[in-house]
Length: 458
Image 1 (cartoon, rainbow, N blue to C red):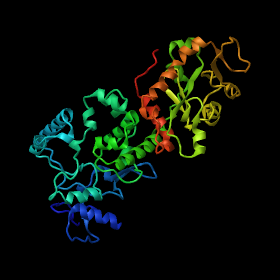
Image 2 (image 1 turned 90 degrees about the vertical axis):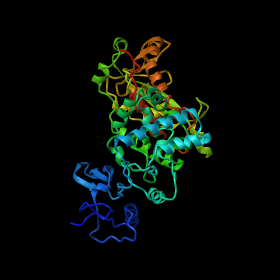
Image 3 (image 1 turned 45 degrees about the vertical axis):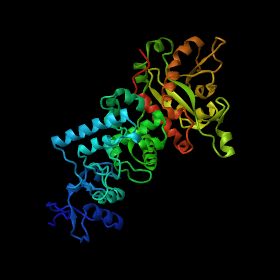
Image 4 (image 1 turned 30 degrees about the vertical axis):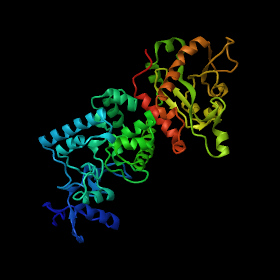
């Protein structure tokens, strides 16, 4: 059995070199063999690959592999010159580095650091790995920088010098809430767990991301949604370029939307009744959903036709409109696609699937603006609307209630819509770059609100 061709490696067997010329060149550069031309029997053993380099689930079958299969895009990245030490001394050094970093960024601006500050980092003998994580494969750019380490120092900002990372969230729930909208770090990990293990094999929009963990990438997405910081600023926070930030955000928005769309958030009639507050059970026991419309502002389109279609007479600006629904228990259970601001409520209801998912005998609660009673009455679905002229509706199957009672009940959906607007990306004018995926952004923000603590009391 042929031995591994990596220098100083004594293992036998392994993986063949790829046939693709570009990928083969990256392998050769990674293993650092000068003037080496691999023959048909040349091998690189499994010790030089990380777990993420192996496919765990079949691409077409969806079934877990019985044996580890190397991905076609995998590049060896674990070597004696890249693996970080794990001794107790090394861990103490990393702890001192983290403490020094926090002090530096809290007390001084990086642009005015003194020579003594730089010396502090140098004294702890930082093993500069050009931002290489042993859990991530090498790219051609990173490999190129690795080759230059011997003649160049501090060629790239290391992970330990980032202004922000998930490490800082471990004991600081206030920061978690400020940057993500979630209550604690454990809630952050819970939300991320709904996307695992698929997030480890995410297909990026442009190129593969190196040097950012899955946690950091998800945190980057939440910061964008919660604080709506520019891509340039997020890049500075995480020590990456603006292009990498855009690649991560677009890829993760599409990925998270696709995964969470598979979740059936429409509850059964039994679940709605079980979690229904007592005041609903007394006054409106047949209520299945409370609906309302909301709009998010967008930048004024350059085309006159687009400006006209997206202009909202209600908001007096260019917007996208959504129909949102919640159960009486406070769970957001319905979200339509985004429509231009000039589209009427009736058109949104007709184009959505709300009529199809409601059952005969259900009641829908809405405000006076939703003059769509006939759409629901044709299916035997009641709709609770405020009515100043107290009396029965002329439309069969439609339930009309008094304003005062309905106002107290509809506060549920108003508060939930307000909760989605705590994600500032929905309150500022959405950049034209993100308008094509605005429906996905809104849906993700809505789903994140479902992970928050309940706002409705029994």
